[in-house]
Length: 351
Image (cartoon, rainbow, N blue to C red; front, top):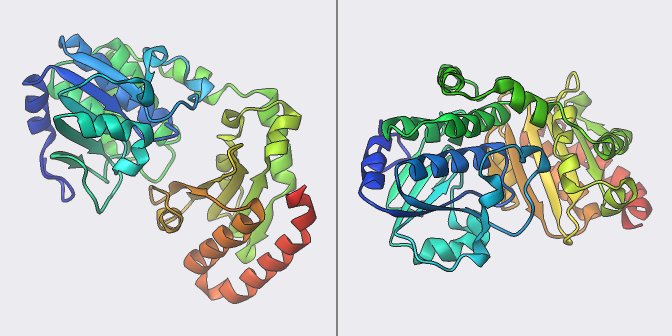
């Protein structure tokens, strides 16, 4: 099927893959379960076809520990360490070159380029560009491609199901559609174990993660009649609790789960002088546009951004954008209340 944002079909991509031999596969910076699941599923599938394949990481940053059960994860290569030439670069779950970070150099050296994604984008970085915003996950698209290649298998199935389950919140988010249930059934038939994914990813929280949750909950700020909640974490919080960045990944979904909340935001210092922001929406509110305002992106109901000034500035600028965009009827009074509140926290934020 040719989607409106594509210049090709998965069938044509399958034929192109069959005609070439060497591939590099990479997803976006800070890869999540869908990004890694889709990329690893393709890597296993292409290798089963006898292709030479390298899976790349966009940066040297460690991936989320809870995804360590994914087969082949240990073989992923930081892109800056990969200097070989490849015929084809496959960008998976990534809409533009900027999100490839260190892998952009490998992309530029490749002779041919393929993009497979479910993020709507106004730009293209590939001669073969397949983008389907209606797809629940990139892993759904990867699984469809593997079926066309007749390259499914147990490892491919586990990786793809992990991506589907994580990007749909175990089939609970707004992006869920009939196709992702069909693909889930197919992956289980191929050998994937949903209970393994549930146990390793969804039911495995460290004590430092729980301590970070306590801090986050103690700092919650509600606006717009309780429809918007935001909170924050500082670098020192991670240090004092013996936590790693992965320990905070689940926290945004806890904020989103509060009754009455339509939009949730958490801002976290990332140890590199930057602020990572995560946004979630519970209804039809579009938080991806807010993320794009700060150079980030994502989906309508789940998006992220990186902010390059102080945490105090972030706690004014990003929530202000949320309020003005999502709750314009309350904007003037609520932004004023926000600014007063953050000014009262300046000493704590600067500590």
